[in-house]
Structure formats: C-alpha cells, structure tokens
Amino acid sequence: MASRQGAADATASAHTGRGGSHTNTRARSPAAPERGRDVSVPPERDPTAYAQTDHFRRRLRQQGRYVTLPLAGDAIRNGQLRWNTSDGWRFAVVRDGVRFVVVVGDTETPSPVLVTGWTEVADWDTAREADRWSDCDLHTIRLRSDLSEHRDRQIPGRIRPRVVTRPFEIGGHRVRTAAGEGHVECADCGARFRSKRELCELGCDSR
Image (cartoon, rainbow, N blue to C red):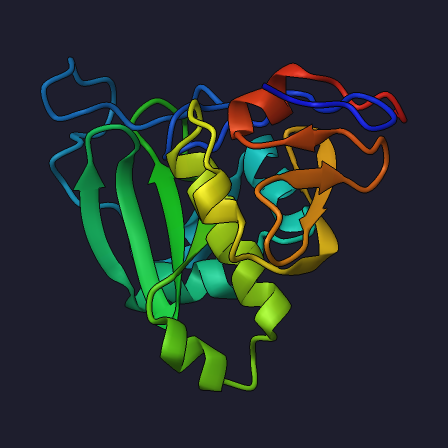
C-alpha cells in the first residue's frame, strides 16, 4: 500500500510489452484473424519505413527510458527479431551490456509503426565497465524493469539495492530511491511506493 509523506502520486503509465498498452497499433498474434499483412511474415529491416506512434514519442522524451531513434534504428537493422504473443514482433540489440527492445506493428495500420521501446540490463558487469553508463543509469534501468515486470506486487526486496539519485518518470511520478530503502519516493509530492500499481493508481498532488 502506498504511504504518504507530503502528498500523493501517479497517473497510469502501463509498460507496453510487459503488462498493458497505450496504443491500439499492436500486432496480432499468429492465431488471430489477419487484417492486411500476414503476421507470419517478418517485418521490414528498414528503419525509415516506420512511423512513430504517440506512445513511442512519449518514450523518447521520458527521463530514464534511454530509448532514442538511432538506437531503435540499430535494433531494427541489426538486432534479433522475435515474435512475442503479448506484443507481436520485437527487435532487440545489446550494446555495452544493455538490451534495447523495440516493438513494431504493421498488420493493423496503413504503414509499419514503432509501437514502444524499452531498455534492460543484459550483462551488469559489462555495462558497469562501459563508459556509456553511470551507476545511476544502470540502477534506473534495473529498477524500472523490476517495477514493470512485477507490476501488481510490492517489491521492497528488489528496490532496496537500488541507488537512483536522478528522478525518473513512472506512473505520473518522478521517483528516486536510496540504498537500503524498500520504496521509491516521488521527488515532487513525497509519496512513497513499493509497486508500479500503487504508482499508477495514486495521482501526484504536486500536478
């Protein structure tokens, strides 16, 4: 349960690909009726063929996402391509220990689109050795992943090792946490949370 220390927190920000979506441009599963292009045919490897959904554009602007158009293009051109039953087609490429994942759709839209994207720590030691990432970057990526993957559960044990001094946006809040704390705290309203569900259900009083 969320505890208040000054205010409330958060608006919904479901993580497409890991438990929800803010767009209706998802690719259908192979078992679903086809509309337009056959989903069994892999999508294009040309980044210039893809338009951006509003959801993807928001991802580009959010602190702590580490998703960029050049990285999305790299994933489409050079990354692994896999079908996922919840999302459809995913491109993924690992750079400096971090995996960049891009979900695309082209069966329910007039042209191919970038639906969503996110980052995951693929190899902690490799990532820490890379000049590209600070410890705060890696803790942010891992914390966001844990909150999204365990959306409905309180996860103080997974939050406690994280050190995130630069607030990142999730569920309408800008949160941070210190080593040993089993919660994240909104930098704006002071509310504390142990799950993404709490973050998404309680609005930020400062906005």
